[in-house]
Image (cartoon, rainbow, N blue to C red; front, side, top):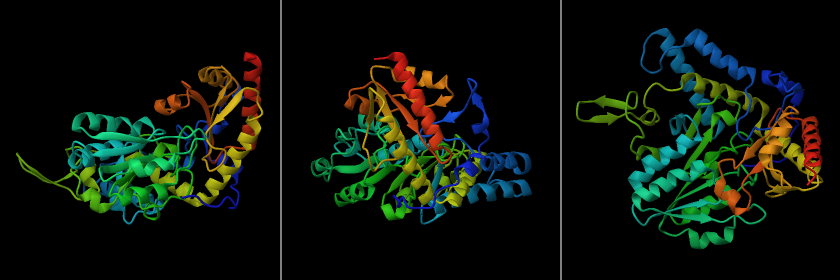
Length: 414
């Protein structure tokens, strides 16, 4: 999943020219956008692809024989094929369109979970999970009597793998975990965790939101069973997400929602379901959003994901070196084997105050619990500030961030 950091550097200035929003000012300052773990900005290629669909080929997909419908269907299904190839799926039918990763994980919990889990079965998660990979399983546990177990997180931000032998038992039916933490930046050993789960017959659901946009990713090489990720974190539009699953598992799952397009035949009292992937895609889909995500995949593919990872690794390493000397600042998570984000606390200054102060300087970061309250409780803090980097960020922007943090520290003089 992780490439060498010796790849050819990205031409960041050329990349920045593709992102119109980076030219705007905030509070009279040039925007420094460092909230990419929440949502990335969109290049003109993605905006143009969606605009072109609405201007030239808008029609519903799959249901018409006229030219516009056929063109829309070709573009829509073409985007699915691009995503399939991007993540190493064996075929496009394994790629299910969802609104986001949250919906993708809920699809697994509601469809696979409700049809395969019974009282006494166990689902293993980790303390570092996003709420999207916690709450659906809590609901299922309350409804079905399923028991939840958790892999603990060490002080350095890594999972405590010594716990696995006692947590993974024949009663464990699914192990759901993040490829990378959206708070700590921790890159988890996906293959090792997957092998351990499969030894006891458990399926693996990977929250890949912080992995697919940032590094080479191959579902077959990882040997996982499900993967969920969001398009808006990888240059695509909001309202676009993906559930990938092994075809044989998806075929055995009942539909998630009922309605048009997910059916093969409908009678008054019974219906027959459509084949994959449409069995899980009821109603008129987010056509423009899928096409936009396809364009985002084209853009990232043209850069090379090895290069994307290498550039982010270099930038986050530089950022950590620069900010660690700020008085009172503490970084959460590992110092190596991490993604391109840094979460931190600064003395007794509330992260919201840090973010507001930086916003006055045109710097956009995240502040809060990042939809990971249990993880923050684990580290004894209610919230953190988070700067997260992507393909269009520069060392100069890191320097602006560092300068801003020094001003915050001086102002609050804790």
